[in-house]
Image 1 (cartoon, rainbow, N blue to C red):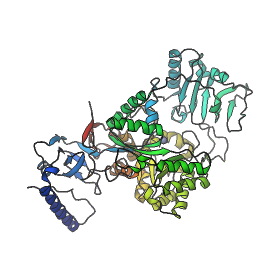
Image 2: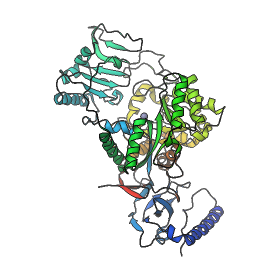
Image 3: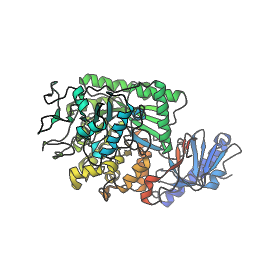
Length: 594
Ligand SMILES: [Zn+2]
């Protein structure tokens, strides 16, 4: 009988080592086949492909045999096909390229799937797009009903400004309009008067914020800074049922599958989100592996926060590591964002019209001081949880690294794979410190794609030297996983943020951005091989699931994706346009391109 050649030799071992390893592997494979032939006959073989295994040697294989959802072997067509019997399903890949099932390190699926529950929301690229939408809503709604737009970042609009009060009045004269992003908002006249915001308006609750006044007339301009809490908004809302939520979530997950995603991390999960995932799982409708990074409020006495963290560790989905839904850790928010001018930076942001920054010393907002962050990290580590914090600015990244460093002097932390989420702005020192501590990162190339134009205007090219420094992170050995931060809408390119992993990989490889000439620090570009690892085995490590997914190797689950073209050789500009022909999970087809 034939034996299966296990893997194709990679670059690293010597010829002699390879020879010995292959002899041993052949002997083992032969022994296994002889003793358990009936049990080990594949029920599925895919062959005549270019199977990118993403194993240690990044070996390329022709064929793969599976049984009961698990990979039995990879190798040459003839060797793998020789193991089939009459019951084996055989699929000719027709020379197509296969990748391991793709993994996204950062999504918010339960919220995103409901964004358009009320009505479809178009893409907003210009102020006119916004006004057209407001006008259409005003025509569809009864007079006096609120029109609310949330998280349409002005930094991503061509004009990089809010729609004015006058523009909103013209689009919707008889409906109050609230346009809000981050802590700020723009209102029309009706919304201002219904909220009691006039020329005499003062903040009275002791909190931050103000309403901008026109210096000529003394009237509110409609722009509120850090004061959206004073808007007396009453949105029309049909309350969705659990069935509505499950239906839309299943639709979203199917769309994730259509772009090759087979595992994701929910990076701010909750009890209600977990109940939706387990409901889909229990009725057999969950075709996705979900790692749960549980959102923990950092507000209140530190003992209370620690108690919340311990409660996550006590959850059955953290203890049971066998199912498709698993808790991996906790997430808090350490700073603001770069789209709203509130990321916490090591140096001042600088004056800005787009971000309305008038204080030359302003560095952004740090939500958790180090003396509270350290006990949170300690509690997570003590309980075996992966800690992560939303940390966009280099000041926040450094604060989190220093907290990890402090706790590492008390106990080992590496085994909990402590994480930094977003980590957009870094430094040489931060990369080296992360590598030394075993800190992992969850990064979003789509932000580079969408926001480089605004960021380079604000900070200049030099201050973006360590923006998403992917090459340096890979070179230093930091395990960094690619994600999208998908938070709104269904559709891999129309969503905010776009969750198409090929856009993510293409951006990581080209470092080219929308409405931006040239490349942003091309010295930080990934190779194609690295970009694939970024969305496969690196994320499997972030998920604590590298034993099962992230690469195609004997013993791992049969999660794989068939592409319409070869990601390793197609023109680099085409990578972001790659289509998925088919997606398989556990050796079963879950998506086929129509
Ligand atoms: Zn997020």
